[in-house]
Length: 441
Image (cartoon, rainbow, N blue to C red; front, side):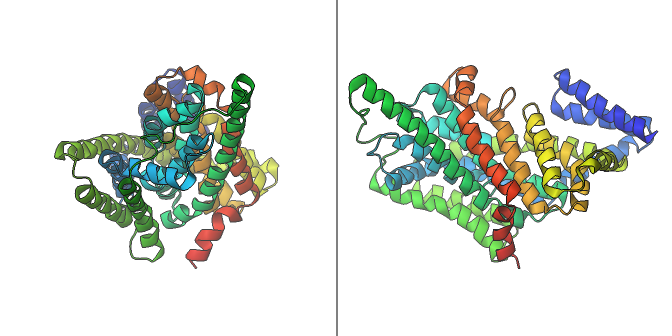
């Protein structure tokens, strides 16, 4: 009977996804049907599970991290950070806007925790500078799509928070574990951009016999000296988040609240042109995004509960047995399946679909859950950048008004820059575990 219930659960899930039913219902409907048909519980029990899934102190960090990103964009602190990065990197060489975009991706990832929000901000702020430096519209969309993916890896990552809650892993350790892999991804992304810059430079020399002409300054990346100095204030948010957790002064949720308060105070004191209406809109948009995340979390919680009740991990363990219990092979197989599924399913549902199933066998095989959590979110970021349903792709296409296909054509090399860090962390998990082990002894 249990086997039939498992088949019914996943068959219903697949049918709903193929039929184009929203993922909230695709997870919830089969879970409720299986629960009632096979006597796993009652409707009241399902409602209790849904409430319990979102009734988590740790999850309060999510709306606060979203709010931090919104306030930084509204107040102008984000644009001042870009001006600061431009000053550090310099605007006097070909393709500098590409490197500035990569640097801005890293900074935005350290304050918002949302890849789609980062993609939208990068697309809005960096389109004109990138165009002036000779990058094609399709490549700009591809670069901001992949750059936004850093938001899932660099702390404070919303997906790391959700993974930690579902897999019962320390959020603080996950945050610090994402730092080195995130920096590696930034480096490989910068190398990919350098290849495109060489291509642009070579074509310019062939056509005109000289390097592409560059403006001395660009309003999106130059900024006044005051704006560049104000950009340093943006570093306060990630310092509060990571410093508070490391020193043991703040929990992840408290650090999120402190960072939100800090950005709000900075905006009020240093950006007098911001109206109360804009601040209200930032809170409103944060609430809307939070409601979406929490509805998905509630539905995912029910699905995960049914998976545990049916002991689905036992079937997965039997399927993975031919691999001989090799941790690397087991994780590699999970990541490959994740990569395929990530092309069709959004990150939050993926966490609830996969984590309850794969974590028990991986724990038996001795896989470090902190390293796996980082690898898991890295694959989620790749899924956000790959067709047919990559959210970052659609955001970049909509903001830049560039055809979807034009962006996809420019993705291969940039996606390779995302795959390389995954392989490095898979082969050398210490890249993810070294920093949290050093700081949380």
